[in-house]
Image (cartoon, rainbow, N blue to C red):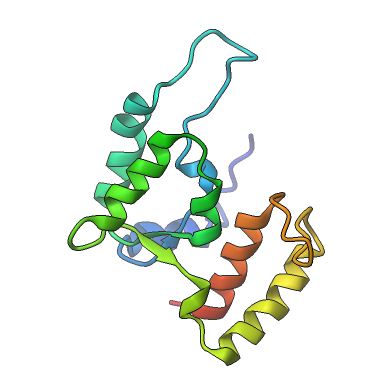
Length: 148
């Protein structure tokens, strides 16, 4: 892998400089990697939680997922983890809900969603699962989250 030190990644710099901004995650971020087809070694959820999730959540206080991503979480452990974070007081994860959008925001989000979806396997008319979380997350972010 080549690393370009002359043009640093501005998104990464932004996250480092402002860890309190809202950072929206995909389902894959919350699910331990499954490599049983390749190796006999695996990572159980408790280790994944201890070594990956808990440290990330302790550093970044405004992590978020879209409600469609929540529906993609496979296995009871990732769902329970997010449920615990969501139900804590104060909440330790933000759930982006389409129902929070105004009518104007919904129209804009639908327009963005259809443009993004055309580049993916997601079809909003069928509401199929392929790439749904990614498309819905990006559409919501583009519509609702102010640029910082």
